[in-house]
Image (cartoon, rainbow, N blue to C red; front, side, top):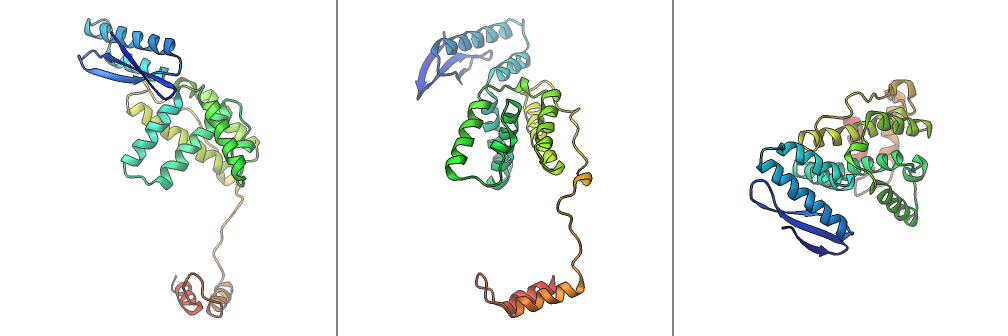
Length: 239
């Protein structure tokens, strides 16, 4: 018989799994819904013990019922545990959150602007949280992801930026697949864009004359961050 406890606004339930071990799972703010989740978990455990169901199949169903936001939190933790710094894990996870928000109707310009006030940033975070609370792993289909990529492209995002979003979402789905949360990688057929057709900041090799002017300007310039002009000029010339 499952037991329940409330932490903050969320109910949790404890039950005995197919291996006879006690497990605690997160439910939701509605106790009756959480009780239904507990009954489903106990039923799945009973079917596995009796040989009527496969443990992996039940695990897929359990993960499918969880909010996508919880999987993203787990993915962020997995990235950190694998050795990635927060400078990589934070923006990568946030990129997927923003992408999913666009999948659920957000305008790319409203959640992906380069400059925002503090109040606007808070508003954007709340909007993203509200939208992705409805999302599940099953929503990450090739058609929906491809359509969201097109929305970023049509909002005048560079093709390279669109590819960054695609890479982040694909990385998340691959992790969910290898971690046993998805039966298969759902985004194998999602195509990217040819960023070479949309070069917005082409780089070129600096000319010798330009390099000389840069070294001279640094040499006669003031100290910056504790580094004298002569030292900066030397560092530039050595590069």
